[in-house]
Image (tube, rainbow, N blue to C red; front, side, top):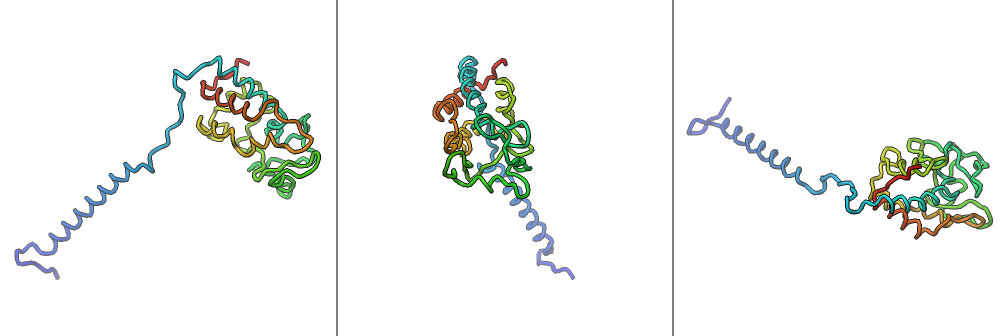
Length: 214
């Protein structure tokens, strides 16, 4: 049974008013959320035309390529699913497999032998808390790549782990990258220091990330 106020409009008016007010509050809340800074898309780093220099970029990549093709880098970026080993980059003698996450399969996990730090002694397993190959869906192969092919691959987000230029710059100081200059006793270091490599890496990227012709 409906109740009516003295003016005859009753509670129906109050219900309609409350409904309209609720809708207005909802619209205002949605509109405000659209302008929240936390939800703003992250802008990708792009090259400025003034910074591009194909000659300097390609020259710098020659140093980058020399490092990436050295055993300390290439051994963990093989063409197949078995990592390489030694200064001659032979197949890992224990034949561990990549696995879907790059950390081995079944009982043959990388971390079984590669501890958090280098194992003392000549030619013993080098260590790192996150030792692994690139995962199966993003193999990032270095072995057998020409300078042109590798340069193109390194900046292709579909092949480099979805890294934009900013993330590639940061990658120069990644823990596994740095491990190349601390490989344990009996192993040859990369052909240049990490500081020289990082300088060349940044120059190559900041000057346009040009690929050599070959």
